[in-house]
Length: 75
Image 1 (cartoon, rainbow, N blue to C red):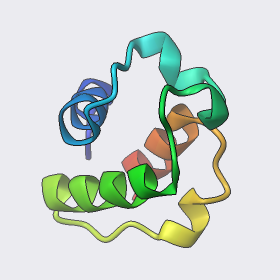
Image 2: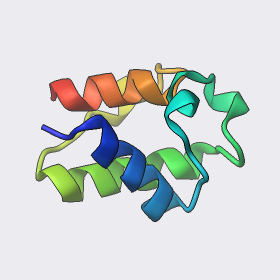
Image 3: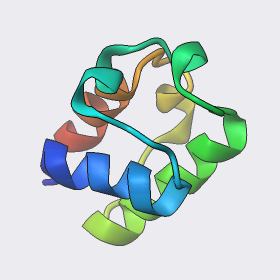
């Protein structure tokens, strides 16, 4: 299981995005510089951190980092 703090740290460190806790609930279109490559890099970082495979197809349906975190934490 990955904690919310660990997830935020991954986004900050691996994607070099300035992310605060309130940004978890923002639509991905509102996250600074967010694009599809960030999603792939995030998935790779989470898989490396947790040792678990993450279903990318389902993550693409999510519209916020909180939704992504929730799905990742449940995996």
